[in-house]
Length: 114
Length: 110
Image 1 (cartoon, rainbow over the protein chains, first blue to last red):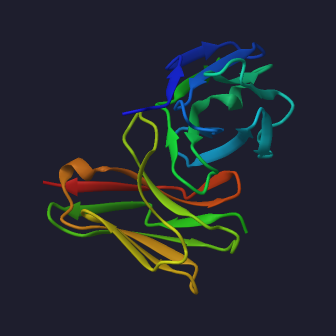
Image 2: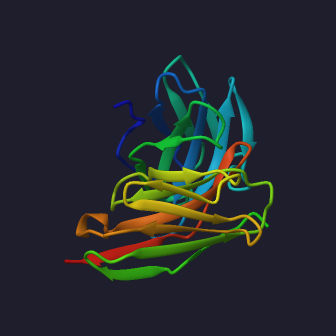
């Protein structure tokens, strides 16, 4: 069964450092998303991406965040200068159509900022 | 207006019982309502979803009931099993994003 894969599963970084979280969406999907989940809280939308550009972003997704699809398979989330409050589980998701159809989530990357 | 309110926060059910989780929304632009199941340390997994033009959808032991006028929808898990113990999130979609409820921790006792 096709799945969204994310690497690494766990990333520890020092405050102020840059991190790149990587995702390989399902191959025939066209819409890509990043969500985050702070421990014990709900899943929050960060950004959606289609046709090589951001479709929508939340207020969380400020200038410290960026997304990129560097090749035909990877989708990355970069945090330029990490803060303690960026510590969370980051989920990549993809859907064949827009988010009003099935969105499949990866296993997540646990980001710990120390 | 973008919020999705979910209740209860936690639920304990005996094996074989019915689990019911409720969600309410305000934004009438939402046009797709999925439920996700999440086990500890894993990503949310799509369980079942409904569009507002139908009032009920059933897949196996899982049923969504949808009340468009009340802007409410619920998940019913029939014959609940210990393996159903997980966190359940309702969500609502408009355009390019899903808005999630806060989640319900379901525990099914054997």
